[in-house]
Length: 383
Image 1 (tube, rainbow, N blue to C red):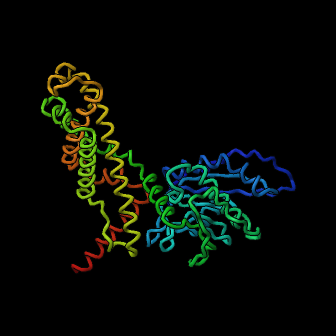
Image 2: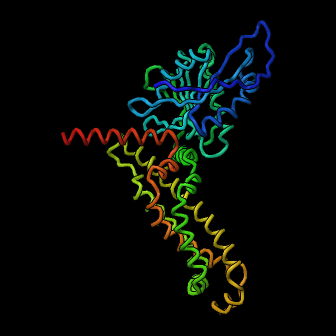
Image 3: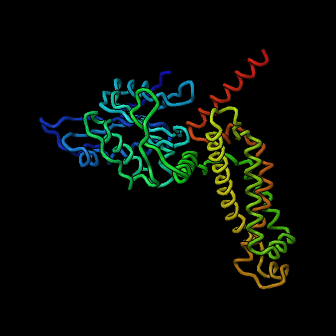
């Protein structure tokens, strides 16, 4: 599948050219969205960083945006794509920056490369949820230091300080791939999960649930105007209000996952552990998105309560003097009511809109491919 791509963008080169200094061009080919943004940021730093770590050459860095297609197994065809872009742009080395999680067995992969082809790949989710620019820059430098820049270069030890939690370099079972840089242990898997959620960008769920938020706002408004809710909020106490809020968020999150069929069935993946990982990322994304909705509604409900409810009326209803804490309690109870009502309103939101907000670009492609496989399997069974 051919696609119209913007011309590659060249990062400023601060290293002076000399006749005796070889020039090496590194191309960062990134998926749309977060990977492209990170690649453009990293491209500004790389020439100077590479000049320090791999001296004796003039480094130029260019960026280009995909999309990069998936193969029949739903993976990025690293060598085919990388070599094609090398020829197209005249790059010496290409590093694909993708938001597709990669694993070797149970080990999350940060990067892998084939020195013979001059193609490497970095998986953004394995970089975690914070310090992405620094970690991506370190991952690209690590690839180049370990032979991607020049197979004749002696491998250097991986700089662990840039890749906490602990990492290891493992041998690859795939033809053409020299080795993988993998995360180890529970901390590594948690960092991959955090990175997957970060790539999904949970806050995008808020505008996609405009219908649900309208229903939630209506429910919260009822709580603000209904004096019995004031009494319940005052009698509940902080601990019970927190519990009610947690249950409300859990109820709406469960409804969104079930109603929009976001839960992936184990039979659609070869590895059950991988299915659990994707479901955990989806659940975390939805929960964080609903928490964002709750926080927004809480601010609106608190502001409305402060304007609508006179302190004397609230004090008379609850039977004691009131302050900001009393208004916060009313707003919290009203918001929890509204969030539960919003779960029903979310049924009017198109499932495609929810999935587009809950998944990264790569995850949407992967899920679409799985749906196609399920449809073909069902057609074969019916035939």
